[in-house]
Image (cartoon, rainbow, N blue to C red; front, side, top):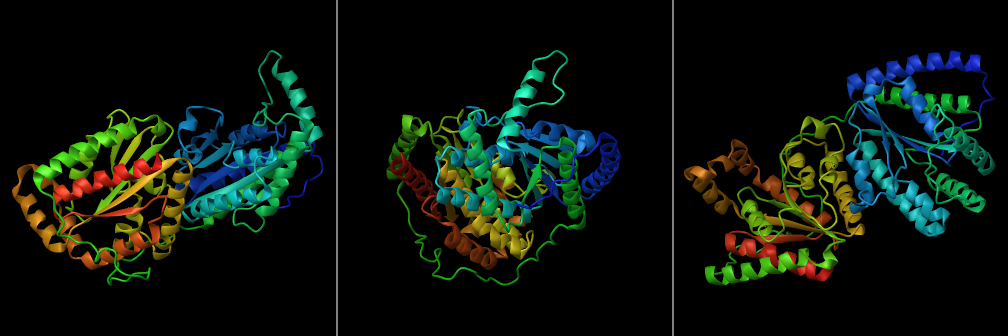
Amino acid sequence: MKGDQAPEDIRSDSFDVEATELRADLLDAQFDLAESCNRAILILLNGPDGSGKGEVLNRLHEWLDPRTIATLAYDLDDQNDGRHPIAWRYWRDLPARGRIGVVLASWYHLVLKARTTRAKSRAEFARELAAIECIEEMLDAEGTTLVKIWLDLSPGNARRRRKAKGNRMERPGGPRNPLVREWAAIDTARGRRRLVEAADELIATSAGSDAPWHRIPADDPRARDLMVGRLVLEALEKARRQRPPAPGRPQTRPRRIAPGPSALDALDMSRSIDRSSYEAALAKAQMQLFELTHSAAFADRALICAFEGNDAAGKGGAIRRLRAALNPITSHVHPIAAPSDDDLARPYLWRFWRRIPLRGHVAIFDRSWYGRVLVERVEGFAAMEDWRRAYYEIADFERQLSDSGYIVQKYWLAIDQEEQLRRFEARKKTPHKRFKITPDDWRNREKWPLYEAAVEDMIALTSTPNAPWTLVESTQKRFSRLKVLETLVARLEAEL
């Protein structure tokens, strides 16, 4: 945390002069950011109750153009929000490049609360902060600048301000200085003192971070507001100087980055099942899946299935058999196409986080976040440094889901080149399947070795106990569809 020095108390006339100049600079920098769309700015506004979070928020909205700034405030006791992972609400509301978000009750809130109440040890606290730092590094690399502010006020001053503001709030005429109550559960002198101690631990643990904390003395509201405004201006000006990363280059040679034997070569592509055995086994697996996803044990869990595979490997048919066993009200299939402009204006995981299902629900992704290390790698849509770090970012994303009680199951449906060609030719001749074949499919066939290397790396680097890959031999569609269902049933039985 940066040691920002407190200026002397500022007189009203001096404040007006400085604020007028600062506001003009802020607006210029804000308009430049909105025009360039180089970065997004995310301000985490933290501090004890009474430190002036509401006043600072209102001041920022006064000084900045309201069209490109938004308040992201959360009630962490809201039971509806609790039906998603904690991180979901923050990802859902991430500002696009060119915009500013101000966060109240940030992702540090529950961690600080747990440390303040001694629900977490110092070591556990440090581990959680390290996990948060990994996420913040990803946000920074993906174009989001974090401004982390702790409004510093002694427990005694905070208590006096809370009392004074509480009295003002009760008088007619409306609140002029709103009190943001985030720490109502920590309302004893001892609790407030421990909150300050937890904040000090946060400062020490985060020292040297690329997104440092800024401790702002909050005893003088005018000085406090000016210091916050200057921090925001500094972030805006820095964002103006930064440029988006250059795009990557299409790959021309198949080159793996993960050593080890081929997972795809080990598949027996001749595996099959006769029709009568298939129909009986399919009906059984679908009934088991229905019962498992309607069980009491599943009500507090959720299921995410990610389907990837060679073009024409049969993902759609497998998904239809899976979906037929699920409640259509609580299950959703998400076909994933190329990212929209809105998607590209945010970190690449944003469009998947916002589709994360409620607890008790099922989400099926027809293509997924693995496009980052498949098509974006091969076609050069992502720079090498971006797709290489994505393996670890994706593994962390899936770990967060697993830690929140989500069951993540991933499938790669595999066919060989000869079978793919046969299916392509058949699609051309089948009226209701002609739409499935595109020029891109033929072009991708020419890059088979490049995609094969990318798939091998993906499997080697992202198959984990909490989010395993199941490789499905898909030459025969009956065998492929049944393996998908039976594997999923076995996973749910083990989890529930």
